[in-house]
Image (cartoon, rainbow, N blue to C red; front, side, top):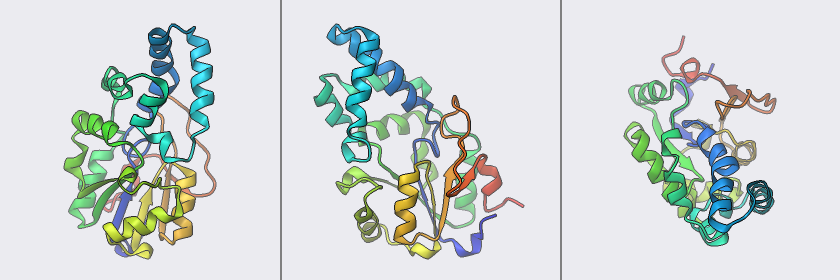
Length: 219
């Protein structure tokens, strides 16, 4: 159990943490390759293979998450293609209740996401997520992904928090490790970011399966 008396600020990832990662997995692995193949006249399986190879080269960088970068790189409108499957955007279980409990307990809740603003806007329109938290920060605004150690200094200058009294919940192990090195006191991973994939076994950090079990009101 978390010691909620020792936590003032809760930093929350969005994709794979508050929202089901299935939307993003389906988009990059299924929808984009199919639509890319149709737009550019490429065999679907060849398109999928080529896209995966190209995308993996950017893993861990800000480009990995950037809608505008991939739109230019692939000559497709990524934002428009994402909008085609917007019905797949969904909360993970018990997220709304957890966020309401944070507010009721007087904790400051801030979404800190690597998602591009265009992706964020689509998801906010579908979920109203911004109504549940105090603030939303995109790493693109700082020009650094959360994996970069310098990101946390920029975040703290913009959104003051005491690392030792801060909880970060994120589905990315590289991000959690970066935050751990920075000194953030409480760290939790997500056991099953994608509802259509089996739970992960992450031994480095305590995993959250159900948010209701980690709420300030949980007993």
